[in-house]
View 1: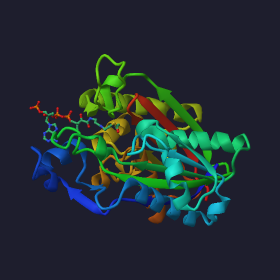
View 2 (view 1 turned 90 degrees about the vertical axis):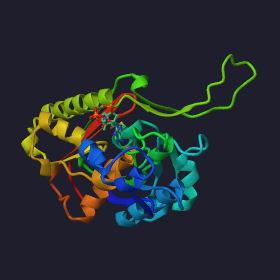
View 3 (view 1 turned 90 degrees about the horizontal axis):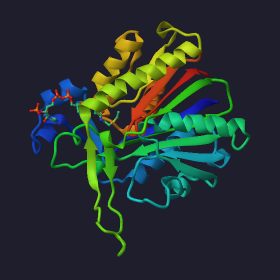
View 4 (view 1 turned 180 degrees about the vertical axis):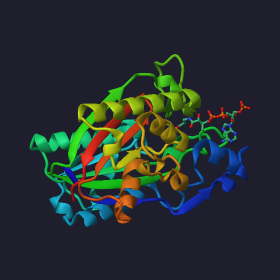
Length: 317
Ligand code: ACO
């Protein structure tokens, strides 16, 4: 499998830390030093479906394929307005696709999990050209009267078109069930047979525990992937990590090794866009000519669950 087209889309509204400090008890200094985030984009005049379609159309255009040549649509999304139908069904027609599709929710690790599924589908002969779309609006899970979660996230969409090739070398997935550290409960309808009505609640996060586990599990994944492929950190050109917190990225780098320049970031501009963060960054790096054929690239993400995932590429265009 190889990636032949990428696209991304951010909402028009850019909100800086100073903008947040106007209505939350926070400061640019606190957010920047604790997370590396300086700004994020938030859905306001458009909706998630608009940016999902925008990123997808760009990725298909960049691939050189026509929409009718896409065999399957794989969407990573944690939550959106619709519990049903899935986001893939909602956006399929607007992207110009007629193929089948499905949604996955593997939190912030959705992109790497989708890559694994796409690779498996290709090897099994189910599809040749697959559009992977990661579209997320995590700002809608937060309590905006509180400062602890709302400052961390941004909305965005990233998409890639994958086809047959040999660039995708290996993938490692991990799950450790621990719901209480990070969760968001949406309200559901109540039946007359329930003892107690549970209304749902905004994102609950134990930040320090999440931080520690994100660093240790991601580093473990990456080191295991390197070891089983006979590689050292010096062999890798780019470590494209999920953009949750610059300090988490630094923590992983201190364990795995390698210079800061090999760990690119977009978190300063976009905050944590959940599973969209890696494909958005990849799209920008390809546009900037930073990704070149033959480069070895590691992608790694960690999220609610806990789930973590890492994969290895030897890039091919
Ligand atoms: N502005 C100002 N002060 C704040 C804010 C804020 N936005 N949020 C919390 N604080 C305060 C707290 O109330 C606390 O105050 P207290 O000491 O008086 O009780 C203090 O700051 C906590 O400060 P620290 O202990 O220094 O915070 P820490 O270094 O743990 O950083 C953070 C907090 C940024 C949330 C960190 O724990 C973190 O990044 N965790 C991971 C969170 C994450 O990545 N979530 C995303 C989802 S999962 C994923 O994508 C991997």
